[in-house]
Image (cartoon, rainbow, N blue to C red; front, side, top):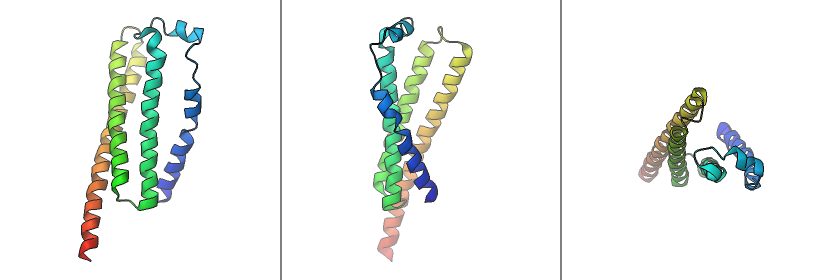
Length: 151
């Protein structure tokens, strides 16, 4: 339980950069010039902001699931649903980023593309892991409920 509490606080601390993301200046001329030749052109900062928002929502759901562990014990449906949502969000995020990487294959170097693919495959694995973890929690809750009824 101590490790889950530590992870819960780490995720709360990671929420601090949300303020910086929300103050992101989209009208900066330097940004316009930077993204002018990218795949999505001037819309690239908005797409990146949407991707950051998806990641933040996924992290917040993981944090809320861990908080449910602390309050309600390990096997509860709330945590299971939070981890399930986070798993799906991470899958959507990583598949979207993979598609963007493949669209920008001509503009980026091989090392950048390879590192993007590796990171996105890792996010896919984490998303699938969260979905599996959600199922384990849900089945554990059913077993716990049945066990409590037989005693």
